[in-house]
Length: 207
Image 1: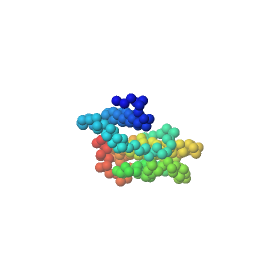
Image 2: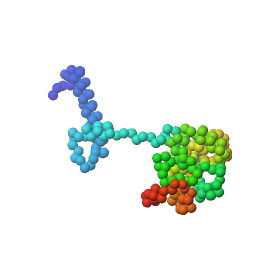
Image 3: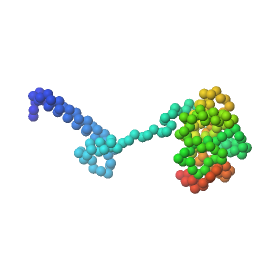
Image 4: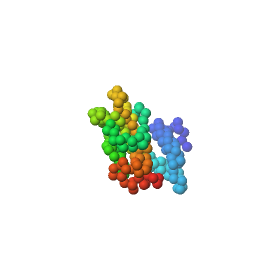
């Protein structure tokens, strides 16, 4: 065995670098053992190969669409479906329902709703607000499938904007239970749906 002191500097540097790299590869490989398939036999020569393959196939999870916009500061105010049913029955002209669904827009919609996909709402808030205001609307009721995601976020976004305009007349609300809850609430609610498709809602009632 050579005395390290007798080795040329370039050889000693190369040897030390190789040792350091091997230590790093061993450490990385050992961390991969936890996720190594249990049904396979782990052989020492496979560890580094599996580690590199795993790192190359791991892809970051894409951010949700709403991450591009500020989180709303207003707390969501939910309106019960029976109150909305009363509004429809009395044909109130100061209220509008907004269906926020896009890819899942199926099975019917609550009568008189306008379809404004949630993904396009935030950038158009000034235009949406001014249009609603010009129409004399006092209540804006948003909903999606359950109103706990898009419905809640949209209602709070508009509430923030209404507040920024010092408007004390317009309310921004979310429909409690969303369109799924509405469709499952019975015939008195279903009769207020356009293009109702029972087969679509049946799959939700069995899950």
